[in-house]
Length: 275
Image 1 (cartoon, rainbow, N blue to C red):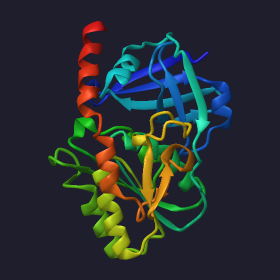
Image 2: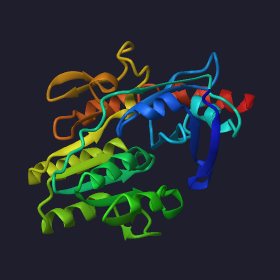
Image 3: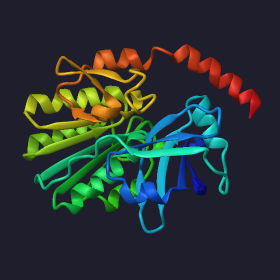
Image 4: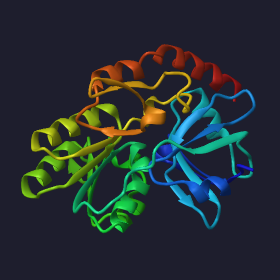
């Protein structure tokens, strides 16, 4: 169980794709849901949103950036090796319906999370415009899959090496100025989601964001993923991971995300010495 049947390195090796044999999860999983993975018996439990599901093959696909000890361990695993545990599907699935014109905005590994949602929105009959952003062209992922999942695709890079030279918010502003958009879905770095939500709030466009980066235990037990949404405390793992982008307290969220950066850096350096 939970054998890695396909492994790919993306973004100059900083991002890794694992396709995992998990037939029972694959049969049940819906866009927006996540799984908890554990590399070995003593390993940390990491929640990751599924980037793809193939019920016929019985596989799920996760895509993650190597940023800490546990993702470093994940990244060292090869085809034929097994995860100790994969639990899911967890979290509330994305509500998919025909809304009209939808804009999906993705950045970094958030593009992986956005992929099944974008595809489902298109299949539901929406006209889908997708905006993808990365620091440079080499860090852009899943362009082919996102092209297939969208009617219109825009690429943005901070350094101008591909597509629009600038931020996803530049393209979003232009689209909102020209068209009536019924829904915006934004998934990526917290600053990106914050500024997308600020722009859409001014225009009165409903916006959905995913707060999966803050999840820890994934079951609501640890309380580490507490977020303030509309002045009320929510847990990203059991109440989300998707929320109204206009109601999220992004400043509080950013502080919580960086609370353990120093400890994470030490843990990663120790891990590098042992792999």
